[in-house]
Length: 109
Image 1: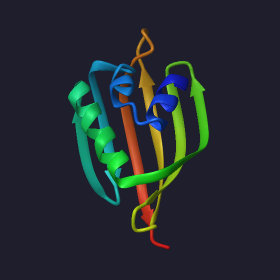
Image 2: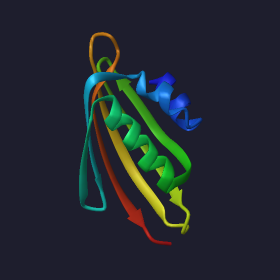
Image 3: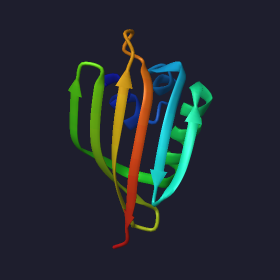
Image 4: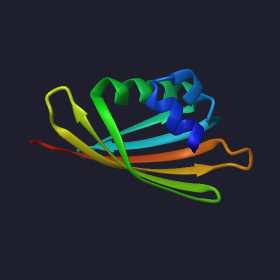
């Protein structure tokens, strides 16, 4: 999890992709709009989508328990709206992310 957070924070998408299994699935719901990303190409697309929308991402809480992790975060859009979200991760025996669920809501200032 430490590697993922560091590389994501530094916008190193290729490095982030290495933390996922080749058959990973990412489920995202942003303001009631669902998206699903599959595999390493999906990871790349998800990273570009999120990093293109948000600036100043702050991690408020990280909890890791064996093969699961939970992250609570907030970020700011270019229009100064705040997005608050939570990510849940599941890892395989090789410590690769097999699934991720992102749920986030926009809070207009």
